[in-house]
Image (cartoon, rainbow, N blue to C red; front, top):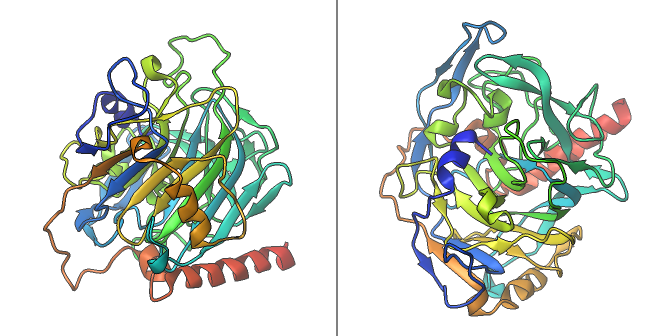
Length: 404
């Protein structure tokens, strides 16, 4: 996770929590739940994208930010394209990304089915609209390690796109990231992916207001001995970042080298926060929707239990009503289409005392009508935006098949 997040976030409980009348309690009084909800998600705000990266291979490297970019609407800024990040100890069995034209949690009358637009299956070695990248490239004083294609073990460099091998275990501190297979145009402030680091394999993330990410995974206990060499010992995590962040720098020494510090967006789906709660998976928004401390973020006042000896299935839904739902369920399916009844049936199976809810604050700022949204949004989020993404992905995939 973003380094600042970890340092501060362990003690950040700046939220409004409801439905805390059930579940088991941890030593600090926070309880375990099966579902975590955030409501009223999305606001009008700004962030500053990176304008230029200078002398990145030298000790005097610098970064310059551009003018502020406005975002607004339901689920913003997480409605922008995001990359999907994994930190060990973790084994990923399945991953899927879905979109829906309209979905309201717990309301089938206003909900449409979900269409799968990306899928990874470790057993069948399926990787549709999925590209595995990892930080195994050249090191830079201000940018850190560059992204490269990940090899089948997830952490070493490959010469081209490679599918993660079945049963791959990444250990503490090790990370990889999933992007789409839709290549970015050339780097530039007016281009679809904005400015990004020279020489990296650059791909779009996964965009959409109404979207869902599902996972089948394991988070086994770390078997290595702890030492000062670890930054995140036995602290596995799955999270989303605005895709611009890793394409410039996920862990910069200069905050101008990433849009993270200005609030372009991070959401932690399942994250172990500290060694005293190593089996507690927290969910946190790192946006400025009602909080000034981006590092602390807005964390649910409850957690989902981490199983260290079994497979877990679940994910996150960003619905059309501004509700974000994080859940864990053995009934999770990864079909090419998931009907609204099936998904809402899973959500309805949780009793009130298995759910913790947090309402984000309403922000009154209004984006200027003359200010455009991000380039990725304008490319994929016009009317029927998910359909345009699907069509673009189809032709890109076909081109890869026939040309390579």
